[in-house]
Image (tube, rainbow, N blue to C red; front, side, top):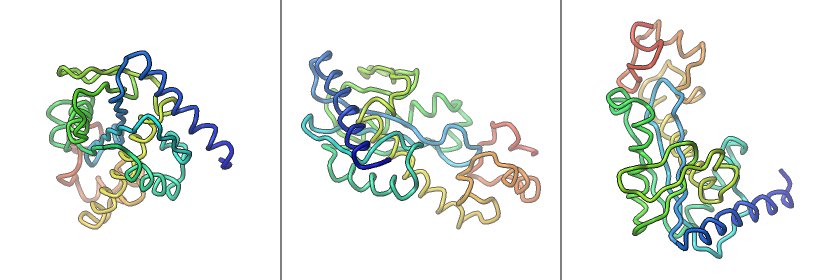
Length: 210
């Protein structure tokens, strides 16, 4: 994406957040997104990001639309420019106990709490609100609409990828550095040869007794 296009997108995402602030009358807007619902190994990560109203970033978009280097550069800008942010996770054990949807919402609530924003209005990518007395709104496709949500998607994705690189060193042979815990054919083959690790989600299809 060219610089002029990024500038246009950045302004568009910022304007969306400004409209939300105008409708709610709140300036403490917090965007939330997750990374890692689909893998069969590793935690699910979530991030929460809040910007001052006058901040416009031209380096961010939905994390899935950016390459690795662009995401990492955007991560540095976001963590520098955000008024506050939080990054949290739910463990494979929590995913197995609660189910992936509830564990994801738990990670999101933890991320908002870590951001330290007092009485925030939270916009969440997807179809779920946070519950638990959080004032929140679900935004389907929010990582392509809201600057705060797009920023959260990048923080969550970069953080989880780094975590999976560390797991690759701890548990060699599963390809975590490449597959990030997703169910690739090579990952399933490793499970057949080596069996599951403590970081695998035992309740997910194809893991236990694969």
